[in-house]
Length: 365
Image (tube, rainbow, N blue to C red):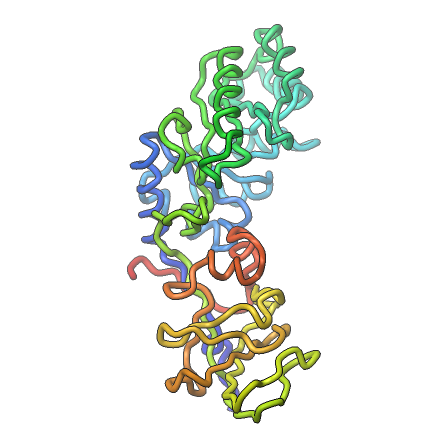
């Protein structure tokens, strides 16, 4: 008899932990906290996460894309929503109609948004992103100098509500670049009209209050990830990904497992095949490296991860049985452990989670 899909795998998302992490960020930073919910709240569900944060009095959010901002507006009707990508070509009208605030990254974008303000004969709110060393988005030094020299003209019609930058090395508190960017950001602020400032994302929250300014923008921290691997994680685990054992079998020493015969049993081995695979976000890189957890005990991945299945060596776990729950992210296996096994970052683990298993949103442990 086939089991319903909901019994094979599931993802549980603790909204109470998201809210607690939001409050932890506020206590650590001593500043207003915005919720970064881009990429579908790092893969955990923008609507549910934003509503939970809104109920906890969060009224400032960041997304990356215009489309994300439009979707988010349906969840948080009165909040300030910043769009990090700025003004996309032809996107000014949509930004205005959905009450979204662009983060302007270049003089050209400033000109487009100022022209939209003049066309509607009413001021428009705007944020400015200045580049302090990331060399990605943001006004470079030469454009900042031009803006500073012609600030009244270029910002005519715009209400500057935020000036922000982004740290490149906040995951490493010993990196010299953190202090360098802090100094450059302070210099940039002195060149611009007074406005609330924001430099710190998740890692920056842990660098101290000098980096907080008026607003911090945690993303990963809200979802329980450790922004500074190698140091204790002050944030609560949010996501728990589990699958169930579909089949057990015993193999003799020397027998192989899975595609490519990538695992050879070195002893008589009990194998558990679990209903999760790379289509669900279990990266192929964890083959023969990662683990699942049964009753708090780790069972190593045996062989390659396939699209729908992964096989574990459960020889030393007597409680393993058909139907047993296997954790791949959660209280036993942290995001950081899962990321290390996959040779990637905790961010990617979250944003790669699949959509075909059910998601359960809970507000208590």
